[in-house]
Image (cartoon, rainbow, N blue to C red; front, side):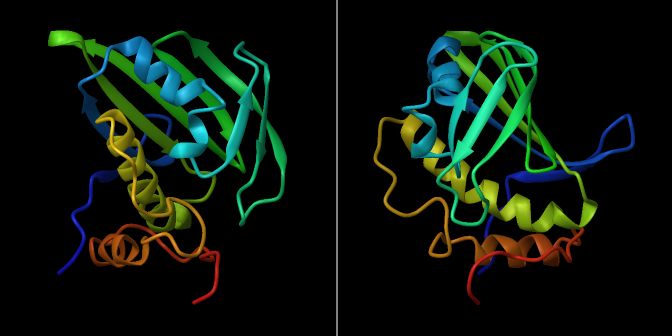
Length: 175
């Protein structure tokens, strides 16, 4: 049985490759904004600890990812509580939030890829991370790792490969 993929491989208007994920959460936009920006909430679903200076040009510090050294990035755009974009390890991450009916929030993550061949790998990783965020938004505990070698991403990776999503970048971790 293959994994059900929620990400889409896209080519942006400027020609850059990306993987995009959308969700609708039964949470108001301010709550979802905290999922994306609060350093106490991010480690529950994001693969790195991140401390964000929430202003355009601000610094973002990443730590705790077993496959990336501690690093810094820069906030590219911020419009609370609707938009956050920053650079991360050669990629650009965009979080776009929109209010919908019934105090719900449409969450869109676009991982603009520095290299096209990272699409399948990154897509698989985001599937696992966003499963943790989905559980968090429902008020449930996530019952598995969302980062690191023991995260259940291999089935998603195989499904992205089978779907013909660009691949070939090194996959971190053993096996």
